[in-house]
Amino acid sequence: MHRSPKTFVQLFLGSTVGVLFLHLIVLTVFLLTNPGQGRRFLIAFCIGYVIYLVFETVALVRFVDRAKKGKN
Image (cartoon, rainbow, N blue to C red; front, top):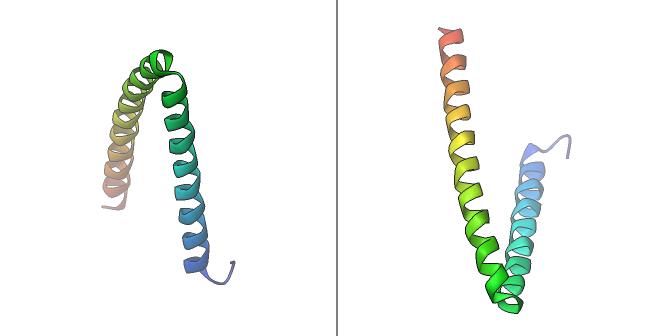
């Protein structure tokens, strides 16, 4: 893999997608087996995820802007 970045990227992204699907399956099973508690968890998880996504997106945009200004 040291000589082929393409192979590394394919394996890394493939394993990441695989883990995400595994988490989705576990979440779905939890929601089906515990509907009341699962629904509250899912709502809290989605709110937390949106907050995290906004924070990470803003941080990434600021980082890229600083990097562009530093090059110019």
